[in-house]
Length: 295
Length: 274
Ligand SMILES: Nc1ncnc2c1ncn2[C@@H]1O[C@H](COP(=O)(O)OP(=O)(O)OP(=O)(O)O)[C@@H](O)[C@H]1O
Ligand SMILES: [Mg+2]
Image (cartoon, rainbow over all chains, first blue to last red; front, side, top):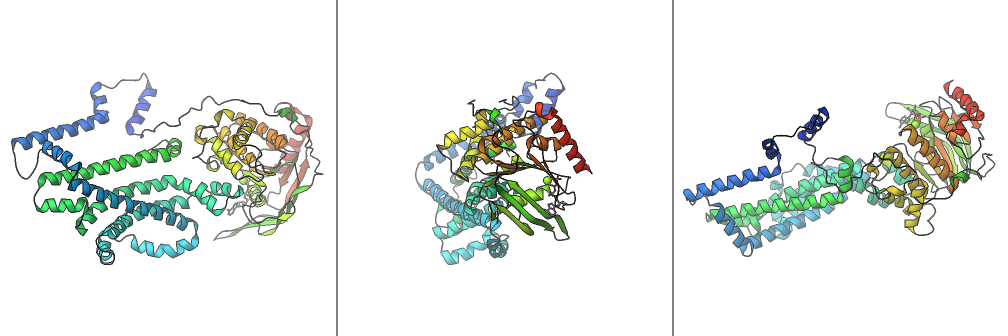
């Protein structure tokens, strides 16, 4: 039997974002001989360039801070040395692990609940009817307004912090799971029906995988929200975590330590996002392959 | 590619006599769509008997209710009047022994599974459980539709015709008695379409299927089927039921040149156009 020679294999290829440059590149190529950009333009377009500028800014800061010493700021090397000292042990490590723990548990609880509830709301009318009013009332409420109430009921320990993080993450995921599970294509549902899938099988084999790209959008924004809230809730509860540590340092005017704390949070956020993208690319490789775009 | 049983055997033991036991019955069926603003009666007073092993094509003018009838027969839509019976049993939802191949294959194949994964889906949700190992069965059905080389590709890496072949393989893997197809080949180019037609005829003969095939293409209907059912343009039942009895196996070139082919084509075109 014949094979189609125009079909190209693309499995596993990481799709590149479609930038406006990629498009203009394409048109210039079709217009005539591929014109090579001047090296300076090519350099400006590379990602390394951005990091280089960032490094240059650090060097400038370092030189300024060494030339004009002040207790109001710290040198880059001081921050780096302090960070290295503290991340290996002591209060910074403890605080980071505590925050991370609160965050991951809250995020995990929210992810499971939001996906289950979102899918049920999209697919079971009774669940939708029962849950829509309370959830719609709760959703626009700023999380900061809920914290005092939760402290009243749950105290200032893990239970409260995890609940706050979970609440902050919950709606991001819920809305996306709901809309993803509610928009399974009719033909796909007909396919499930004609193959005689039970309700559970339809959810597990059709609805949830089809909703996965949408669920991942929610999971990603929830990840950022969880990190922010897990730090803030530590500040408000005032007993442990990075937020609490920062507050103590701010009160005793330890500028270097404050910057060290902020740098730690930034790096935590960066690492979590990188880990998220790693997982997403594996789970949703079919989706990126099929749509050829990635934010 | 592994060779499966010789395609030249196609249709030799199938004869379009209609004497076989009735598998599918539509008994005075009607369908009225109710939308908020109005009611549309797409079909009424339609009766039809389809025997086991038959290859039936449904044709008719656009909007005459072909898709509606197929959705009723395949249990995806409940009839507002009358009864559909499969093997004598009134149906209430999609019958266990039937599978569908839809026109929009891109929305029917599971994009998160490879071609082999999609066929395995058919095996797992089969009417009759497969004999032998799943891997061999997957290979068998992929070979049957000529996709043995594309087993580990994803649907979106295939051409339209190949995707539709994958959908056919998946449906066949469930070992159905009945296969429903609604304009299943309209979305692909003419050459892929000819290929799909032959793949389908081969599979029909190999697997002992009963096929109900909706198409707006009279040539396709005459080429594939033993029996072409023309629906009334206003949905009032069956306008004509033509048994063509063209010889099998059929060939894209030879069959289409037969005087009987041309005769039936002319007769059916007139029925549909008038
Ligand atoms: N979901 C629906 N709601 C309301 N009316 C519908 C619906 N589906 C079909 N109809 C109407 O029923 C009639 C038959 O439609 P159907 O899709 O069965 O025709 P068809 O023969 O398959 O047409 P085509 O050849 O264009 O596919 C048409 O008048 C159509 O407008
Ligand atoms: Mg139609």
